[in-house]
Image (cartoon, rainbow, N blue to C red; front, side, top):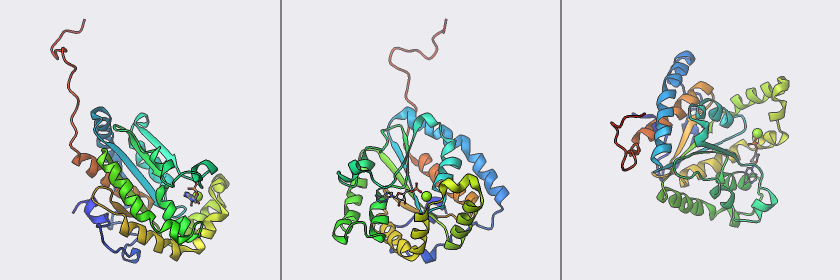
Length: 269
Ligand code: AMP
Ligand code: MG
């Protein structure tokens, strides 16, 4: 079974996160997992170059998860196999006044990568059915219709050559507690600690419920959601890397040929 098959949320599956173990590691040792990750780097890099050269597809990697679940870690440890010239990372924060004056997809659509590029969205339009819902930032009549709108939006992107992979980094509340405590204990991590993280933590079940609905209703063949076991950082990285690799390998891409009039046997003087 491929990693893609194992961790993908089936379209129309009614997902229960309680069925997904955040501590999963296949009984593998950290050292071996890290080696496997390392061994994948060159192929990931080559395939990204092919994506760039062939200009047929864009790749959009979307990262969601509770605070400390490792969204930044995936960018640091997985995405860094790619050439930075071909990548654009966007972190979506509390919307600005200008962003709020537009429809909720506006700021996201502008940051969707062009063909040839890899876009990484650290948080995304899903915040508009997650934090917005749980914190009641807008009434239900505003966020309820958004699942459908998101599905249409993602269909539009797929039609335009955007290959999307959506990762939910699934950590346990116990693991989050440890990570937050570590942030408090280390002065170099204090900048990452926000009181709002504790507010979100206190509503853990509500967030999980909101995630379940988003993942159940918005996972499709062309824009699948994956539930990534994220209590162990190295295993999380290994699974995300494998899914990226499997997707890139499956794409029908070809190296561009020489421009007309150039003979490959010509002598370079
Ligand atoms: P961080 O990812 O830790 O830098 O925090 C970003 C914060 O922005 C998180 O608390 C998100 O919940 C919040 N955020 C992102 N998108 C939205 C949105 N559409 N509406 C409200 N808050 C958002
Ligand atoms: Mg944070």
